[in-house]
Image (cartoon, rainbow, N blue to C red; front, top):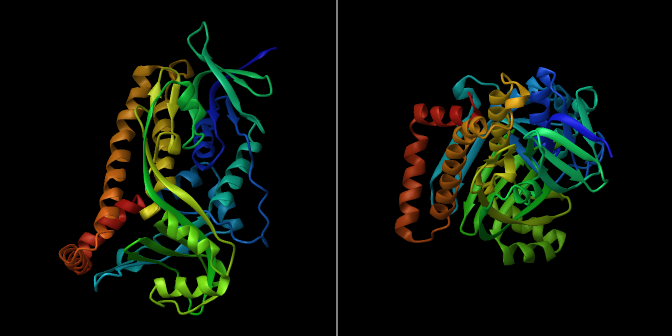
Length: 392
C-alpha cells in the first residue's frame, strides 16, 4: 500500500486539533487530520448541546485567525458581559463587569459542537488538508528518514515529520509515544444540563461556591443557561435520578434563587472529573496539545482556552521553520518549555481554589469571605486579573 506523505499529522479533530490545523495550513503546509467520530451537523433549531466552553478573547483571536469565528457567530454563541461569584458559606461576593474595563464583553459561551463543526467547515474547504474519518490510529513507528509513520484501522499509512496528539485525555498518540501521565481522581462529577429561569440571566455568568463544589449558570441565547455543577460523585448520581420538578427546585435553591425558579429544563448528564498531566509534552517527532497533555478541574472553565494556547504556541514555533525541522526534539522542547509551566500553574491554582472553597471550617470560611469582599473593593486588581484571564 502507498504511504501518504504529509508535513504533519494531527490526531484529533476537536477544538484544539482543528485550531492547530487551521493555523498550520496558513503557511501552505500539507496537513492530515485523523478523527474517529465527527459531530452531528449543526442545525439552527436544534436543542442546546450539554457541553459548552467559556471562550476567552485570546481563544477568539485564534478562531478569527483561522476564519472559524464568523462561522461560530453565525451559528450560536452568547456574549457574557459580567460574572457574579459568591460564597454560600458567608457574605463574600465579587463581580466582574466588562463595562469597568471599557470592553463590550468578557467572552462568549459557546457549545463545543458549534466550535468543532465551524473548524471542520473551514478545513474541508482547504486543499492543503486531508481529513481521515472515521479512522483510528492503531500503530506508530519511526521511518528511515527520521520521521514518523502511523497506521490507521483502515489500513492506510501516513508519514510525517511531526505527529500531534490532540486526541483527548485518553490519548492513543501519547501512549504510542511512550509518554506517561499522572492522574488525579477528584472523586467528583460535573453535572450538566440546560435551563430557563424565571428571571433573565442579564448576560451574566453566575457562580456560587457550595460546600460540595461550585455551581455555574452560564448564559445562552433566548434566556437559557448552561449549568455546570461540580458535586461529589454520589450526590451527582442522586440528582440524575430525581424527578424533573424536584431537581428544578433543588437547582434554583442551590443558586439561592438569584434567577428565580427554573421554568424549563433539558436532559441531565454527569461525567467524572479527573486531573491529569503528561510527564512530557513531546518526544522526537511527537507533540501533545490540549487534553492529551493536561486536564484541569473545570472550576473556571479554562480547559479549552489552555488547549488553544497550546495550539497557538506550537503553530508559532513551527510556522517559520522548514517542515523538515518540525519533528526536531530540540525545536519541540521550546514548545514544551513555553507551555508546560503555564499549564501546571493553572492546574495548581484551580486545585487550590477547589480546596479553599471546599473547606467548611469557620476560620477558613471567614478568611475567604473577607478576601472576596476586599478583592471586590479594589477595581484595579480586578481589572488586571480579568484582562489576564481574557488574554488582553
